[in-house]
Image (cartoon, rainbow over all chains, first blue to last red; front, side):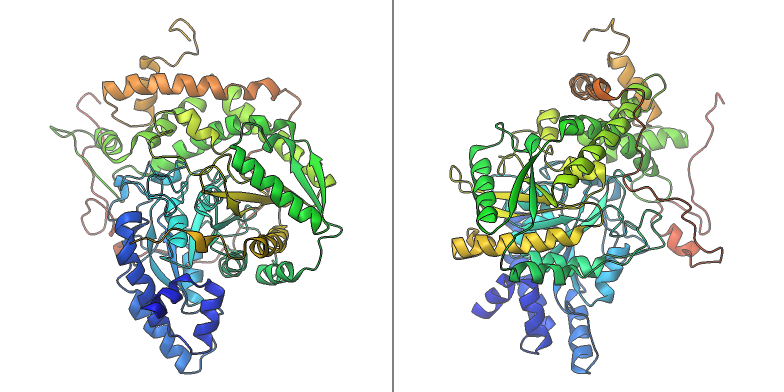
Length: 504
Length: 104
């Protein structure tokens, strides 16, 4: 039992080392995580589906390893998959009733890459319906609980992936980030999450929310684990026309270099004035400034940068996202897949479609589809959608100017620690403003990482540190992230995820 | 915001948008959304403060052009795979109710 506990608490890279040395089998590691899911997921609700093939897949990896086959570094390591990604062997619902029980006829590219690298899919994780939300309260299958406090939200939309990792149900998970859905859950659950450069990871088979913003990325408990997972899922995919066709450096190598760094001399770290706000929770600001001091003490130069248009980012985002979502979600039409509801007395295909979408979509999805339809309608298009696209240009220019003065930009990952269930559910604008720190990176396409920076003194809950780099500069996130992680852990004397209350 | 404002999101506007979006909202939902959307639009309309004429629009964060694949047949879904998730089909086609109503 102690052994199984140990297997679920170690990092993915440590587990990979134990697997390749033959010290532990993939069946043992997978069983330990399945047992952990059985023990705690009744409370957490991170999983919408647990794979029935995981042990058989693990056994196959063990056999291949025993046969002397050369396998990927993460071969045999279990992973959880956000339910927004299509899986040929598991239902894929995106947290919506309209897709309940739907099994896709193909794997999303990041999932196919996981399988090719020998990772073991444990199951599918909970999320706000179609990734619309910051708390998982908009999942049609009930919210996920934060392992740090079961009365609080785990962030969203990828709260299931973050909670699974934080509760030791999986060492790794996949997420998707349209406006912060990887970084904000990481922040409030004390885990690590990365939104890669737009186009760095294929979106083929990721159920689209807003196509010009969506990006798939890694969720983990350590910076190195996120880097290694990014190496597995990244790269060009001809099936995604927004995929960048270029060679990426090894992010694992960047994380290892960062962890071994002896100084940050020469590194210019830009603090974005607009995202170091007096309106943020006091303990979040305190931990952020302590982390900056730690980086300064280690040789980094801190510069203040001005991004005057960031204050318009949330407004632009909540025009662009609903506009794109209203178009993307038109595919849920009761014809080719998913739910079909026939109104009483029958009706035309259009009546069936309207009845199906009424029954199958939750309130937040309806709200955003109607908002997007409004923003795109004749007469308002220029004032709303057109203006939002111009704001996007201004935000890109702010980033370009900031990266003239700094190599990386930093901020808290989220303005507060995890809030309580129900606190913002009836006030959509309050929920939307929660994304103020993460949205600018999506609008500009630049990569961002969230990693733990300590517990807020006032409530003992995790806070997150965000690092952003220029487009294609993802390696800088892993390098600085690994340095900061090491400096913080030296100070604390332990990792942050190890402090989560025991469950089950 | 009052109903006399031409840009106001009234219940009639929401009902029209819902019909365009093919969602058979209930009257209660329409009422609630009219209130919600009014508040949201008031907050996000600020984009027009800085979106002046000389600023170009950005539709895509990292522009790419001429993304084509080679013009060779690829692997596609089989008929069975394509129909596997359909609510109703006849073995080779998706089945739906009448396309046109009586009045059409």
